[in-house]
Image 1: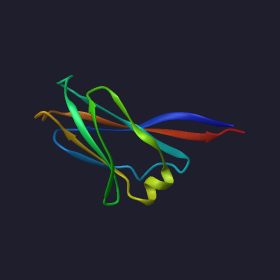
Image 2: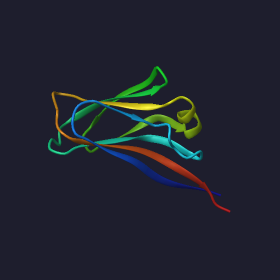
Image 3: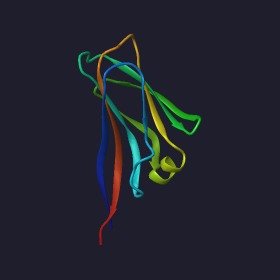
Length: 111
């Protein structure tokens, strides 16, 4: 039987654009999505890009406090082999602090 455990990797960003590596996940896990939370502006919006080496495979926009799911589950083996990274850029002149939370599903085989 396979059990699912949702986890996350969190970074607190002082301001401006940020790039976070996503090539450090356990072998049985899958990347799910992200959540960005601005500290002082609940209406802040953020653009994001998912990169594999030097290829941008997906872009999107997320509002502060909301989750945005990737278009598919990305296995750790793929993210680790391709130096996967997430690039975040605040929109609408927002230049305050924010928290980036990258979501993953840690699949665990139970006997």
